[in-house]
Amino acid sequence: MLNILIHSKHAQRYNEVMADLGADNDIRLLQVTELDIDTMMMLQQRVDNGEWIAIAADREPVRGEKVVPVSFLGDTVAFPQGPWLMAGLLKASVNTLFCTRQQGRYILHIERMSDRIQWTRQDRDEVIQSWVQRYAQRLEQVCMKAPLQWFNFYDFWKHND
Image (cartoon, one colour):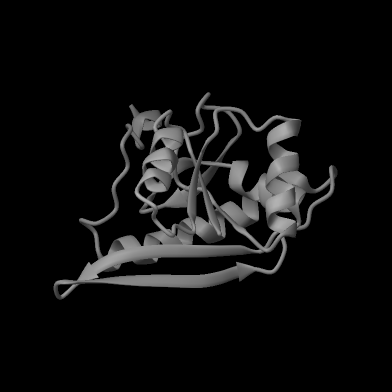
């Protein structure tokens, strides 16, 4: 089962429609605006059951907080800490998933970044910074190969105004 965390109130409706259609669907959208203790416990249970949690690691956090400045495409930009904090708390492996269109076909790339993100209170900021920068470098490679296929639905470069 793949659980995709999104910031859209349409998640519940998507899940209802798929169930109504009788779709044998191994994808569950979870509308998450806050990662409170109940949500984290639910996610931990799903990880413990062997399910995957997916989160976009290049999207602006809902409240615009908990970001890390990293080098990306020749500039310094803010990427969210959330995916890396969550991976550490859930003791989950981290994989990247990129989909690009090449010669009329969609190509899916899944790569293991880490078996586990580990940090302590003392080194958390440094460890998270390092992982976010690694992710930004990998995303940058994909963007360089397919520059018109990276979509972000907010003003990603706004900090430079």
